[in-house]
Image 1 (cartoon, each protein chain N blue to C red):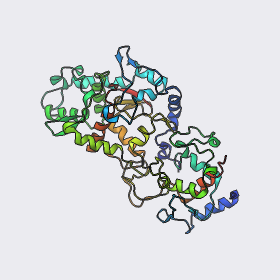
Image 2: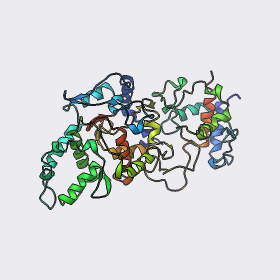
Image 3: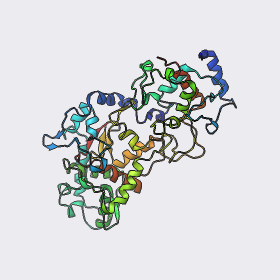
Image 4: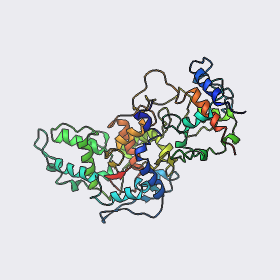
Length: 290
Length: 158
């Protein structure tokens, strides 16, 4: 009965990364006056007062960076040490490449990636034209199919994660300010309900681990507040960029539940809700995590 | 309340695989406090095997959330639930069994999974595949697993 599935459990644990994760618990205690300045110039807000809707829930909100080991933290502070930046750079090439039937590249409308610096900090966002909440990934595919006449990227494909990393990278240091009111409110409330629902045979909600138990260890894992301001995240565990929805799927799978699909309305709603839990932190993606 | 000998426990394990006396999850009887007085296998458990169930990531993995000083040889004890040191002095077998089977009876808001229950789940999955489960749900632990844990927990006295 020794299978890969078995090894995966704890809730998330894998022996291979156990030592790394443990180092995190020993060295990265919450509130020990650390700071994160990337490349010596991009100042990050790694902890701050909670947004209004979380007052009474959290005293402070923390970037997941706070919960990681000194070594992992240092990797994110220097783009030459951050493998996630390699993927963002790959997307720079795609950005300038004409795709689809209309003869357009991303650069046709958006002069350069830096012109999108305000995107990551405000997404997901209500899309008036389509009458729905759009994530960065959905917006990219809207451009690809409706403006460029191109095939959409797979929601969690390498190309999409690269592009998401590029769009995050140019917005690093911006304060997360995702709207939860107005036409987005219904979706936000749906996301909140998902956040507090105890899924699967283990009957665990997002809140059970990331609201009630952040800072605690669960086997070898040091639980964070589950903030998504730093996505996509380059995880040392799987040595690749991980999308927000990919991470949601992994967490729900580990409750022994039937997950929702990446790009599904449920995960879009959950992303909107969780993003607003991080209002006040800064865009960090692509980050380094366990 | 002395423990069985290893031999008796092994015989118990062998017997329960075929034993019609095993109480199915849906037939478990609890009192108003969530206590379960009857052994799920009709026999006492094996505390030695209880250690395996408590520490194996594919079984109970109790130490994922609970610290146990007597199990320090196994790495990485969690902090999500209370320490289990001394639980054998604080609770009797019926209470311990009730908590392992379904802690939410004794503690309605508990984060702890229900280890011997087969219904009432939201989007139950097929192991760790992320896919929906097909057919009837098996409890997370077997009746024998639960009894072995209960037997071990009773050894954790102050």
